[in-house]
Image (cartoon, rainbow, N blue to C red; front, side, top):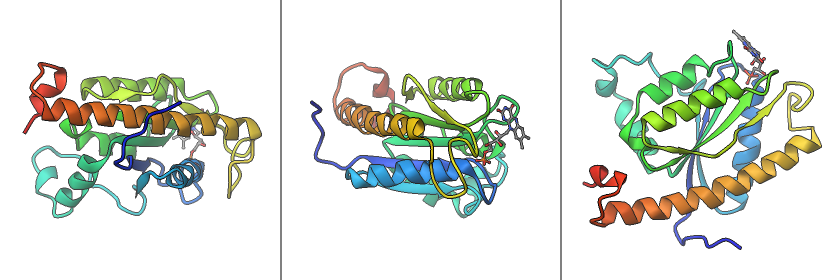
Length: 200
Ligand SMILES: Cc1cc2nc3c(=O)[nH]c(=O)nc-3n(C[C@H](O)[C@H](O)[C@H](O)COP(=O)(O)O)c2cc1C
């Protein structure tokens, strides 16, 4: 049994591959559809359609498009982070997105999805590291998938991956919601938890 809050879960789904026929995008779309079907609000950020300039701390925050993107990031309870495995690492577009933000991620949930021939474990670990640096949480696992065998040009085709994505989508909702409710309480309260420093 799960106890869900009244506020809909707000998920930002980030596609970290710029490739036109990206399998990461197909898997993100699949999970996003399921989340919407369960009442979540999903904001899709496809970095191939909304390219971000290379992060420069001197200029990034003065970019005309920055405030609107910051508001979208701020609004989210969960970040669905999709990336291809490049040299055992997350993609440059995803890292560039993550570098633009910090306190916006605090107390929220990272949920990693990695296109990889090698289980994507090092990329998943890198997302755990980013989460730790930003006082965010991660699911205790990520889901990886292989192009062609698991995902064709249109859809997820491997029944085992479909099952794993069902579990993933469930966990994103349940743990995303638990963390969101606790974050709201902590931000509104007066207890000395780690979120105290983010009170406005
Ligand atoms: C520059 C580059 C480096 C890559 N490095 C790895 C790697 O280290 N390990 C791996 O399993 N796949 C690697 N790949 C393969 C991609 O992760 C794989 O093709 C993935 O499915 C692409 O995802 P996408 O279709 O969403 O772009 C690499 C691909 C490129 C272009």
